[in-house]
Image 1 (cartoon, helix red, strand yellow):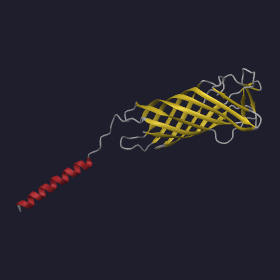
Image 2: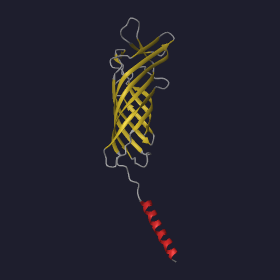
Image 3: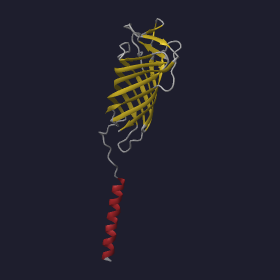
Image 4: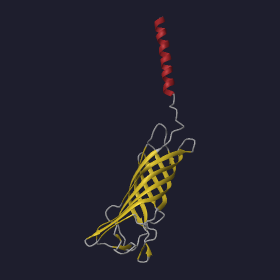
Length: 228
């Protein structure tokens, strides 16, 4: 009988301890952040274009970088983010940028006789954003809405025009706008998110076509991926 009572008491203690452990909640880390590397792939639609302007094939845009997450709400679902990144745009269009022999200025025209006509732009960028997400310390699968503003600096460019009669390659055209800026938005769940950016300044600063300002504002739409 004594052995039975001893075993029964041990069983009660074990069950009580198990229930206590099972009911104990995992503590939430009040210091967790969503520091993230980001990578986007977009289609570059040009706005504010001259008459006759068109794009062909796929004008791609790629960005990558790192964002530092700085939460400011008690449950850490609101934060600001600031980062540093790189952006590349490969625009395929019917704009001919030429530099005739003997001329110190570039000329701009719409020319559909191209075999290849591209404008490649490389930027350093600094994004700053306001972030909302329903993330928790226990799960990194969550909904997010990030809206922000970024400033970009053009550090390298190259335009190419090739046809059966003409070939022009111009590097670091000084008529391209050096500093770009504009708002962006990313919305989605977990790793994959929809992304859109609009450049408030035109890609060309002083260039003209048919006595009118050339314009061409970038409008990028696509997907952005966040990696912790």
